[in-house]
Length: 314
Image (cartoon, rainbow, N blue to C red; front, side, top):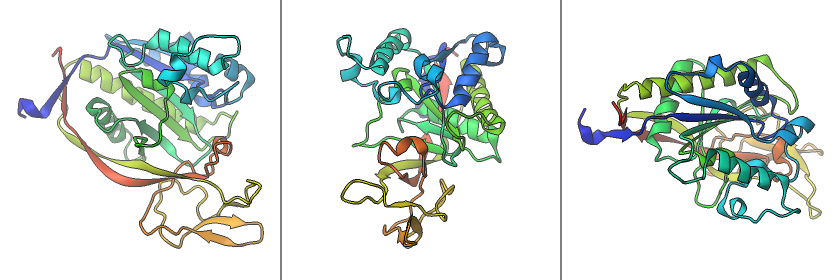
């Protein structure tokens, strides 16, 4: 392999595993609390791995958030807000987390953060990619997908010119979202917990192998890139007038073609998909997104190629 096709990345030394960003998504809460008491499972030679509960008040109340969504406030305006009595709880927490694991965008920020989430949608064990130019994360996802095969492990790319997430994990040099479902809010399922646990195991194994000097050749991964959020049909009072059609329910990552059923009214009327091109819905009927006016997300399949990768210390 020629040197120009290999990216030299600094060794990963500090890793955080976040649970409880949303307090009613219990797999990450359960695992992080376990690892805080007994972290042998997540330790790797040469790594400092820190399990951390990000939204403790929401976790205690088993609710998504207290004042606002913690996973949407890691933007410069909120991180730079002056702390006053009326500042939302999650904005204060975001500033605290940024001080502990950042600052965001700085050289001293944590190298890698895994942020653990559950969804009520049938998404399986999904990896969330924020930046299509991050060769390190794409190589990691390629490694995780191969380790989990033949079990599916979709990659969801949330890079979009008009949709900004400002996620909790975005303070790290390498942010990794882990979204596993279906699981109801406030509930633990052993099979979902196991999927999440395996993803973290393989992710940490990749970091260890990378730090030890293994060179990873260029690779290609298939991802689902977000293109649009879709709301439920509504009346003039903004009330929902149709629900997810049974043919779409639980069909995350499956192709949706023109004419396929999408919504169903109480009168039995089917509302079909009118787009001209095939899309792949995800976050279908996610419970937490009713307040965000989102029935599902449309994605398209694309292939991304990561450059070869090697630690700069090897």
